[in-house]
Length: 394
Image (tube, rainbow, N blue to C red; front, side):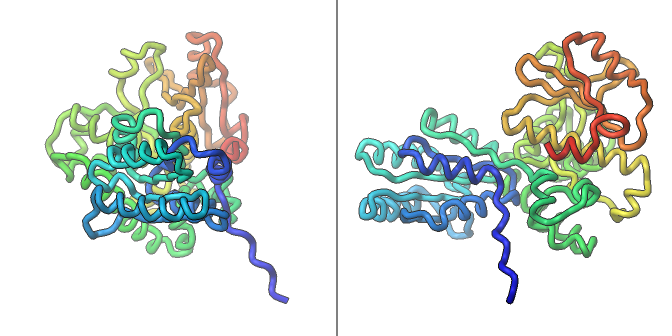
């Protein structure tokens, strides 16, 4: 007899969304995160099989969308909800609609006043625009489920990857079936994922006066992930003219799109942190390998190259945790002493050093950090410390 197919993999956020939909109508549910992390799939998994009618639509289509279109879709969901005693409206890529938040506010408030049990889920892959619309018009009416990049645990469970495969290929599930053909995987990453994110989630929806400069900055951030680099030095590496203020703004846009970020130096002072030299950090190591010409085997055999990729994998793990609200991520340096990452959660402060090979017993960066911040916790990942696989599994 043929073996029974295993159920499709579900991310843990599906349980959270399911729980909220089982509650009485209270808030608009916002599912937000970078492109290609499975937002649409997760909502479809949760809503399929519910005992209420579900009306799902997408604003991510070439035909013109506007308030009238959203009103029409909302009315259809209302009719179904009234007939069945409850229903769900799902609007994907809602940020593509002009003045979307004002329209959603008006329609939501109408349903609240009428006592209509229509629950609403909105999805978006441009977190910057989503946040702007939510805070400007929908204050007090929503709660967010943030969907970050896939973790090592999720990728291993869904696709059976090894630790080395995750570090090299990153956590993009859509590209997972292509890793057997490295060139095909790279073309998919560059053309279908990276270029689509830049053109549709950044350049199309936000004013960018120098789009070529933004693209160059993104590639530079991927190639130099894990390195502390001033904006002045970055300008020396880029072909298009610009200034530090422009680069800092473009880096914020790339971070909002869930691609790369610039970590600040931890100092205990917010003012000093804001003026610090940034440390570049990808949010998914697949972005580094997409711009590389090396295979996994060649990268693994190069100690320095592999070490930088391992550090970026740890940094991405921590940065994605920070984006979900678990804390704030920094780096630390004092003259020639450095700590790879500093993770702050409330009053708790953890200094994290990453070693891809055998670590020496002396860690001058960690010791210097502890000397300055007495109550900090020290954590060595790799080497003689916590195993890399164990750390990325938490």
